[in-house]
Every structure is written in C-alpha cells, then in structure tokens.
Length: 219
Image 1 (cartoon, helix red, strand yellow):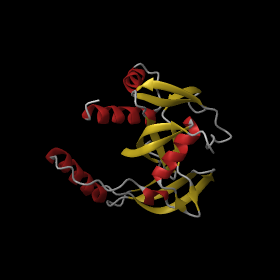
Image 2: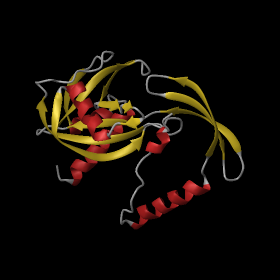
Image 3: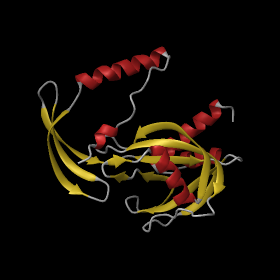
Image 4: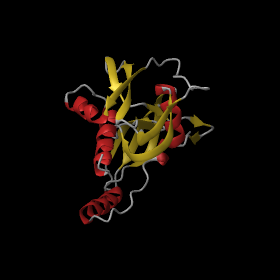
C-alpha cells in the first residue's frame, strides 16, 4: 500500500524575513507538540485513485481518537498564460458542485507500480489533455493542500507559458471528461473570483497566487 502522506509538501526553507521565519519555527515546534500518531488503520473504501480510511490516533498527551481520512496521491493545477495575459480556463460539470464550474486545468498524479508521477510531468500532460496546448516553459509557483482536515491531496501550482497548439499526436481528455476551453485575462479572472463566478478553491488559490507573482514582476 502507498502511504500518500509520505509525499507531503516539501519542508519549507527559511525565508530571510524574521516574522515569517518565526512562524516557521513555531510550526516546526508544533509538529512535535501537537503530533497525532497513527496507531491503527481501517480501510473503508478503495476507489480508482482515492482510499477512505479510519485512522486511530494518539496524541503526545495520551489522548486517543480517530480520524476519517481520504488518501490521495496528489494533483497539479496549471495556470496557462499567453503573451496577451490571457489565462486558459476550462469549464467542466462537477457532480459534487451540482453544476458546471470555471476552473484552471488540473489533474491527479498517476501512480504506477507504487511510484507517484512527477508533478511537472503531470502538469504538462494535463495541460495538453484539457486545453490542447503545450507549454515551452513550465514554472512551479507554489504548493498547497486542498482540504487538510480530511484529505491528503497536495496540489502543485505551475505557470505554463510559451503556449502552442498540440496539433500532432495530441493527448485527449479522459473518456469521462467533457471540457470547454475559455480564455480570460488574468485581471478579469480576479474579478470573476470576487463576483463569485469562479467558485473552485484550487482555482481561486491558483489565480490569486499567480496574480501576486505577476504584480511582483511588474506585469
């Protein structure tokens, strides 16, 4: 069995900013002080790439409890940005959200023979499958958990630039995916978030992180 918790976020390095580094030191201490050690595990359900488990835990103070955890190999989120500042977004029907949603392209990391796919490889694959474009440059901007209260999914955010159509041997979407492509300037994407048009949390986080990055570059 793959322990997807072993693929958690990279250990954060010091930032050189005293206030932030103090927070990092506090989090490192909290890792030890507040740790919940798994002492038992029951598999409830196994799906195509997710596993629902009930974990028995014990805290350093001896308190015992259980946690319902969905184990997930991780995923990627891609912000495809063209030379005009337009983002390539996708529209998909989300059953859990009871309707169609406007999102950044994204996808789950593949797992083969116990080996989890490299995030950049997955980002390039998902970009081509969902938008029909390939990126000349793929830059990792950030990483974040989607719902750490119950889900181990860790998302790696990539900025994709130097976009060009994948006209030859294009990778197609999965059979169960019906996707529409939408282009929107990144500043208009922020307005769409503020107006509630974009409701998907991974896309909201990704677009806002992208905007912060672009503004820091003076764009």
